[in-house]
Length: 370
Image (cartoon, rainbow, N blue to C red; front, side, top):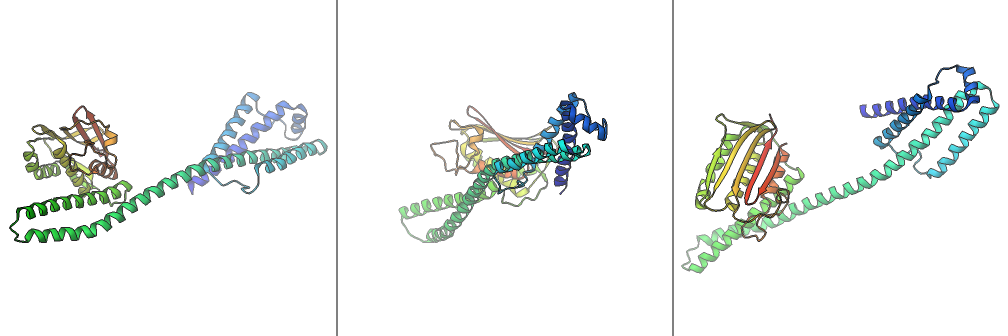
């Protein structure tokens, strides 16, 4: 409401200022007009041309910009703009005609009428042009939103439909594992089914979470969290996995506990994905660095590791959906981990960045809470 009022105040001031400037310009250009007006109001509303001409241009520009930004509907939407120009010309002609035959006191009202009609036509043209341009933009934006919503609903519905039979498959695999069958091939086949079903379940879960995180369709409960404590807990959970791959995890953090503002559940998933990503893609027998840094821009969590495969993608490309650093898809990642991390971090008001230098892979989670 205040914005609408401010817009109309700007329009009114621009109209009044523009009229005073236009009247001064006409008085300077036409001596008869100036004479008749002087008999009625003297030198009132008469500005120097060096002032009146720039003032009119500024007021006219301010008026048209205000109309453009307000995106108000045209005054005569169903009337062709050329047809509006005809009565405008007729009204100005009549004002000039009556100005010549009527008393001098009629010049001011006639000038107001002529000025108002001309400015109304300019405002109409600007409004229609604005409406035409922004209509195309709104249409394109609506199509994009509709496509994103359709994609999200499709992923959610398909994932849900797949999850139902998958649950039954996993349950029957668990029953098969309990059977006492003395056949090595049987046990091997059941093991393969078990691993592939678990991977498919993880992929479906990642799909649904990526869909929700990417559209912001997730609840966020921001509170003060001990970042050093959470990092230590997650590092402890990955100790065995790091050891199995011959990786050495190096933790670096300030002497004092570091607190940040985040959602504990989402933050846990972010760090869990980053640690899991390091386990999957780090070169064996190398070190992985996890560090908490206090900077002017906020609290920063960084993780550095040496990739076992060559990375030929940029950091931005790696955060896209289904994008993986190993294009040969030799690992069992879903390609959604970093996309989920980026979406969750931004959902919590933070920033996520990836820097790739050769085989050195560095991620940064920045919380601007300082």
